[in-house]
Structures are given as structure tokens and as C-alpha cells.
Image (tube, rainbow, N blue to C red; front, side):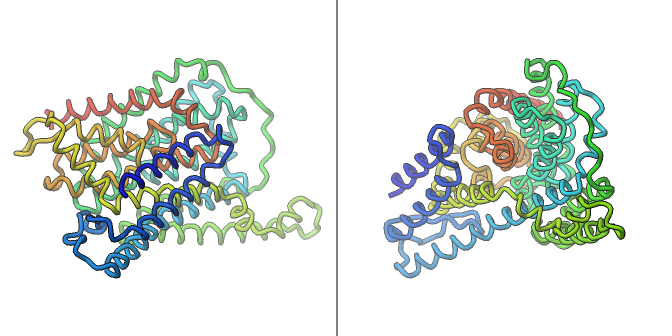
Length: 461
């Protein structure tokens, strides 16, 4: 039965990667794969001998001895648990996307566009790489990618050039998210799970993550795609006098989310909904103020009758949201049967321990690096969840920091290997194989360079 489930996942995964060849939107195989996997699990529940408890990050003892009704109850609870965790991500994403679209409604990104005076493709590359690296640590790699690609669309009109920038933004955003406890969902898991502290996480990973971003960007700056200058165009007058205000308000609202989480200890999506409510309130107020008393401005007068929030919601990439739902719930199905946990455990036992003795603990560098590479193929969240059950090292052991780095940056090697990549894929319609051929090798070099940097630093700290 487990073999059948893995086969269905592989077929669905191939259908996603071959989206452009099959002429089928990737959300279709993702949703079908999710539904079929859980349906087969429900029909064959009595044949499964193991079940993984995601809440406790461990296999349920005595699962095989449970009756049919008890097993179905466990399945339903597991399905609801994963739907809840997935929905947290989706609601957070919806809030972030809506804020970005509200900013765009007021042409707020034209403000940042006006700051980028250079037309040099190479300089623009470095500007966006550093912006992605810094922003992702503050507002998380997913939101940073949404914001920066939205800005990029205002600056670089040629899509064939823009997707190159998008690829390097993914690498930089994932690298930036790895060294911050709120920069990536996996580092947040380790932080909440009391495996790492903020100070040590930054101390261990800031330099390796920076190396992971700098080397691919440096190599890319010599590629033909980043030579010359972008095409200049006449700067159109601002659509709204409130553009700059809404930009700063929107970005501040997004930055407020991790602060809200730290204060209240509530999930990030709650803070995002509060931020969205504040931004939407000001958007409605500023939209109403467009009405001219003399009605001499017919464009503004007409726009004033349309809610900026409703307008923003109509532009949300719902196919990307549904794709997220499908792929995350499909991976959750494999996780629930303990397949990912057993795979990670097998790696731990079967691979030679290449690490050195540190604080009385042997660390398998090869296993952690393979975990990072694996996170490009399978979602990094269940892999990190499995590692939490695999290892019992104490707080701030270097192992946990290396896992945070590998899981956070390894996903850059494939376009669907990270949340940032999936969002960029949806926003720019980037082809899976184009990314693999053009960007994947750069991400791999950066990943390995950062890993080597981490191992070297470990001997001195």
C-alpha cells in the first residue's frame, strides 16, 4: 500500500514538473494527488502498521493494534491538523498578497522604482539580491519574494530578463530567511521547538547564509542575462498622491507581523489579518478622498466608487493558493504514514557519520546536507519535523543550526522546492525545467559554499 502511495506521489510530482509539456495547470495534478492519497489512506487504513503524530513528532505507539473506528478517528484528526497548519500558511499568504495588491492599487511601488536610478542590469541584480536577503529576515522569505517581484515588474518590463532576476531573488530570499527565527517556516519550527535561540541562530548562520547569497549573485553578474542596461521608458505620473504613504504603511504592517507574534505568541496569520485590516482601512479612506468636489477629475472620480480592497482581492493568484493546498496536503499524507520519518531515520543509520565530536555529540554532516538537497524535492517542513524526532541534541547544538541552514537554503535548487519559489513560479509563470537548467546550478553552488563555510566556522565557535 505504501508503495502505491509513493508511486501516486511521484506521478503527480512529474505531472507538476511537466506542466508546460502537458498543457495542464500545475494545480490540477496537485489537488488530484492530494485527494487520491488521502482517499486511498482512508480505504486502506486497517492495513497500515504505523502512523506519525505530527504534533509530537513521533510515531504513535500501538497504532497497529487499534480498531477500525479508532484508526479512522486518528486519520480524521490528522487530516484536520494538517489542514489547519496548511491553512495558516494560505491565510498568511492571502493577507500578504492582498496588502501588496492594495499598495499596487495606489501605485505605491513606483516610489521604490524612483529610488532605483541605475539602468545597469548588474547593479539592479545586486540591489535586489541584498534587498531580498535583508527583507526576508524581517518579513519572511515568502512575503519578501512577493514584494520584490511586484517591484521588479515595475522596473524590468522584459519578462525574459525579469525571470532571471526572479531566480536570483529566490536564492537570496531563502538564504536571508535561514538566519532569522521568523525568516522561514523551518527556522520558526526549530525556534518554537526550543532547539535554537535567536542570538545563536544569527551567530552561526549569518555568515554562511550571506555566502550562500553572494557567490551565486557574483557568478550570475557575469552571465549574458545581466550584461548591458534595461530598456528605459518614460516615467508615468503617479496614479495617486497616496502611493508613497500606502507603500510605507503596507511594508510597516508586514514588518509588524513578527512583532505581534512575539508579543502575543499567536500564529503569524493572526497578525497578518490585523495588518491587512489596518491597511485596508486607510485604503478605503484614501480611496474616498479621491472624489473631487467639482468632479473635474473623471478618472479619479470613477475609481473612487470601487473599493481598493475588492480590487486587490480580484488580482490574487488563487491558482497558486490552491497549488499550495494540494502539494502541502499531499506531502502531509506521506508524512502521516511515517514514510518521511522512516526515510530520515534510515539515512541517519545507513550513512557514515562524517561529523566531528562537538560537545560530546557526533554530527552527521552528510545526512544534514542530504536533508537540504531533499528539501528541494520534498517540502522542507516535514523533513525538519522528522529531524526533530530523529535527534535529541540539546538547545543550540550546532546540529540544529546546520539543519536550519540546509532546510532553509536547499529548496532554492528547484523552483517548487520552497515557498518563495512556488510564489515566484505563479507570479512570473516560470517553467520548472528552465529554472532547473538556468538557476538550479547557481543555487547548488551557493548551498554547498555556505555549508562549507558553516563547517569551517564550527571549529572556531
